[in-house]
Image (cartoon, rainbow, N blue to C red; front, top):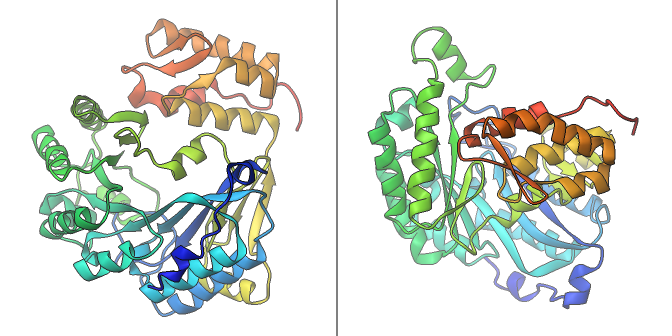
Length: 400
């Protein structure tokens, strides 16, 4: 990759970096070698339109370059499988970003990658680019789990890619999935210990969920795969928390654990309500008041962008929408929900409603108040999303 991209970064003074605030860029790369049985994200297993889609991503970046004020603080390649991009395609995207946006220095640049793509040559190419953080979809170090999920990589490839990646990257995150049918708690512990053995500073871990119209849902209905066991998943979850916190990880978000200095800046910005620009088919954007999303169809997306039209829908968030989103994201994090902020941003009626709804969960030791901040207890963490939904309002107080 052309090293001049790194050298051409626009260095901004602290004053310039604060002007207008910052935002993130998310790029959706909708291609995969094969479909994981549990996945309901937008992707295609045909790579025929990959070059056309990269051109369209770059054109959308140019069309929307003045949409959000301030500097780019994070760049995130998600998918799909972004590690399918060639070094030339990545270079094309980076040149477009740096030629059209003010990019903060330093900027966190994350690329999601699958182990089967991460040869040493590929990792070297990525390390020679502006990418400074890898998020690797390991999911499990056991062959039987990978086959059940229909992952494209093997257990040996998972271990090999982490060994290689550690030589070139300090900032690495890996994904693990728990609650997999047939996965004993002992095997789950081995998964966690294996992950820790590589010295990885960040781990994201998610419960296996059955999404509608996925292969996994079909297999469970037909009895091919055992149903999801919620009690087992909760056991796995608490095993994960106990093991990682003992090893010095901070459980800073429901599904994310990081060593100090290695929290995901991109994801933290989402949870703290910062704006972001979503580029590519199915990508979502947020400007603080409005949320928009692009069409979930590669061909329609490409055709629209070629005509210089953004194929998206937009909704304006009501006060209640913004309150509900703040409660949902806040309860998932170590920063919690500030009662004072609720009053300042949404009004006294929202504050009163929040405290009233929270009271029964406080009495059950699922939530607690630390000064002005509402937080989830260890007992309540596995129930965080359900607790948040019980604190939601349904446009009870006012219109937008």
